[in-house]
Each structure stands twice: as C-alpha cells, then as structure tokens.
Length: 269
Image (cartoon, rainbow, N blue to C red):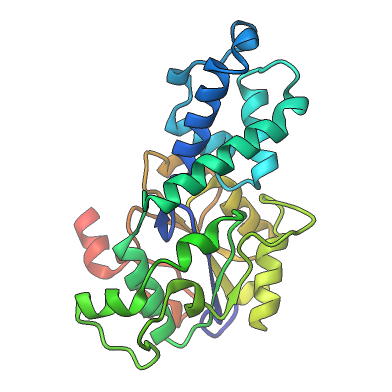
C-alpha cells in the first residue's frame, strides 16, 4: 500500500457523471430493427422488448465499446447471423443516441459534479476515461461554472464558461484503443497521461467491466451503484461501493483510502 494519498482520479462517464440515454438507445434501436427490417428473423431469436431489462443492459452491454456491445447483445438474444448484423445495429443505435443527446435527454448527476470538484480541490489530477465515442458530447454540454454558482461553491480553478470536458487534466473518452474493458488499457493509458503510477490512482465506475478493468490495472475501484446493481459491483471486487458519491470521504483520499464519510458509516449502522 502506498504511504501517500491518491495522485490520480479516473472517471467513467456514462452512469457515473451523466445519466446518459445509452441504455434507452440500445433497447429502442433493437426493438425498431426487430419490428421492422429484421421482422422475418424475430421468431427465430430469443428477443422480446420485455427481456431487454436494465439488468441485461448492465450485465451484457454496459462499459463496452459500441461494436463489442452490439455483438454481445445480439448474441445474448440469440439473433440469427449476429456477426453479420452488428454494423447495422451499432449504426442504428448511434443515430438514436445522437437524436436523444440533441434533444437533451440526459442530465449530469449533482453528486458527481460536487465530487469531481472536491477531488480537484484536494489537489488530485483527474481524467475522463469512457469507452463511449459520445462521451465528449455529454461532457461539453455540462457547465461546471453554472453548477458551482447554483451550489454556492467557490473554487479558484473554476473560470467562466468552464465545461466538464475542459475540466479534466486528461480525456481518453472514445479513443481508439486495442482493447476494451474489462481490459485495463484505457485506465493504464489515463494514468500514464496523468503522469502517475497505476497504484496511485482510483477509478470511479458504475459497470462491472469497468471495475474489473480497474482491478486488473492494479488500481483502486470506487463503484457507483445508481441502479439495482450493488451486489454486481461488490462481486467484481470494488474497494468501495456507494449509491451516491456524496457518501465518499474526500479526506480519506489523501490517506490513500476509499471510505465512507463518518456520518454515512454511522447512518448505515
């Protein structure tokens, strides 16, 4: 265990910083295909709209690059000729997602914005590291200066017009890498660009594959269970699992500890 505090914080985007419409886009796109141009193979698959649950999204798609996620979903629902249909499904999902983003069908989590500001105020460099090619679309639309003003927060590093994309010291979101999560490549690259050793970093993730990638990269993993997925993140060996980043003891980061705030510990008994 390092004797000094964390020197780097690496954040996933979808589900951690932003309530993104990825799940909705994947689900609606598959339904449109199966009820439209793929209707002739629907009865030979195991797909139904009711079976595409949040748990399926979390277990099968969440945290994976677009093409890997598309293939995983088609194989899960046993869609015939799945490899030949990946491109069509991924493209349909991307069009749907862009429509939802342009319609502002997403929002930033206030607890996450407060946490990234607190981490920066503690002197810890930060990086965004999402597999999504669309992460920067979200980050660029989230105004940290407006949030800080609304919350009455004063930080020397907040300038007028500062958005979340420009806030990070490194941004690997959507970058083409050889391996997707649960391979640790994206997090190891983020640590390198922050100029710190992997063991000095903690990763904030909401997906099992992301927690697995952090642990494979010798990093501490902070799991955010915003849905009914706490046990999945615990099972992936996250060092701490919270339902809100307000629960995290920021002072503990200076001691290289992922712990809950004392009042949270007491409240949970």
